[in-house]
Length: 116
Image: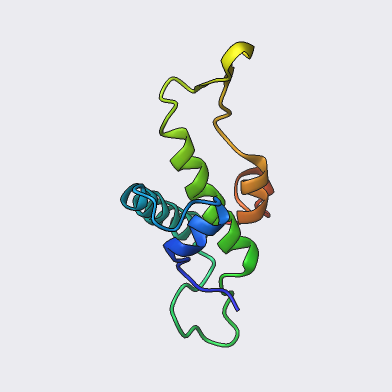
């Protein structure tokens, strides 16, 4: 059974972050933003605590995608120029989208057809 919204402890476990890290406030802010974003773009899912039996509910992929999205946003906040320094190897560009996360969340090009 999955928990929605995912708790901070799950995000820290997914990121392999120490239990008493000083980044808890920043991590929670990223997680809250990711939850809000997912609920907005995946409006076809019933996020209520006790949804109706026939409703589409958050599944493990949706929860993991939300956690990974929050983790990526947390990491990207350290690279405002969209570059990451790799020591002697120079720098590399940070991609602006993540196909693996889009696939988990079933958004972007991985979303099925939508009829208006």
